[in-house]
Length: 341
Ligand code: PLP
Ligand code: COI
Image 1 (cartoon, rainbow, N blue to C red):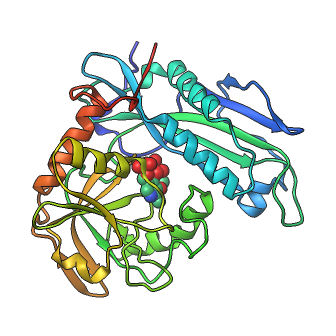
Image 2 (cartoon, helix red, strand yellow; image 1 turned 135 degrees about the vertical axis):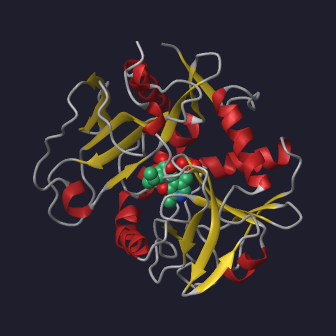
Image 3 (cartoon, rainbow, N blue to C red; image 1 turned 180 degrees about the vertical axis):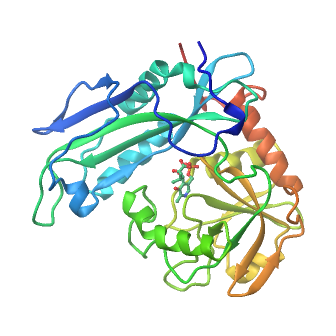
């Protein structure tokens, strides 16, 4: 039985659901893992995650399709990205096939929280891992806990499809040769002051530039960026200090193979931004959120698509991607994983 939740008015927040998956790594191996109703974690005061922030996470969603199935989108890519993150953070790697199994099991156990088709809400899935044993000298933990919880969510930005405003901050998100390309909790800790400051000044998000030269566009605190040129080419920044967004990789494929557009992943200089016709943020949480304006220290760039609605190409990309996720448009082979109830 579907839960009695006001799906249409959900924001992007945490809501406790019934079950979560837990697996522990000890003495060099992972245990079988189990599903538990206990949402709390008890760990040692000196756990590596608490002292040295040895933690990482993933984010994906379960969708209710037009024909009533529950599916998730490319979970194998989240599994691989988490493994890449763990290697970079000297954490134990959770096997990729077991990651997908854990996601499936957790969604199955919380299936009544998957919002109905057309409600505008989805079930957000949060796999994560942390170093759990006491560590004093600076070094990686010996023991780890991998968990997966779910929470029904609505749009990441209030107002859904209404264009947002970004500002170019004086803060950096990632260092050259640092951890910007993996999903480390520390990257988000880095961004907290910048986002609080952006909100204080009336902006929705930060458009980070590359920290080495501060001349090239990178991404925001929680999403990659796409631009559309005046002749309808979809352009996304290429950089080895941004997160390889699964949504962005999927959108570039959709642009080329479904919409017949040119799609380019290349360096984007900030001084080119004023010449684009459309801009949007893309990610699991953000989906595809239109950007109307970018403000760089008082200088405003207003995209021709304006502050009222999504640009035309952005809208086509949005409709196609969400159509694939919700089962109204045929998906490329391997993109959709059906979760049996
Ligand atoms: N960039 C950052 C910094 C993110 O946190 C996310 C969210 O996961 C993304 C980009 C988008 O990635 P994905 O499309 O895989 O969710
Ligand atoms: C996601 O899109 O899944 C994210 O992780 C972005 C943000 C909520 C951190």
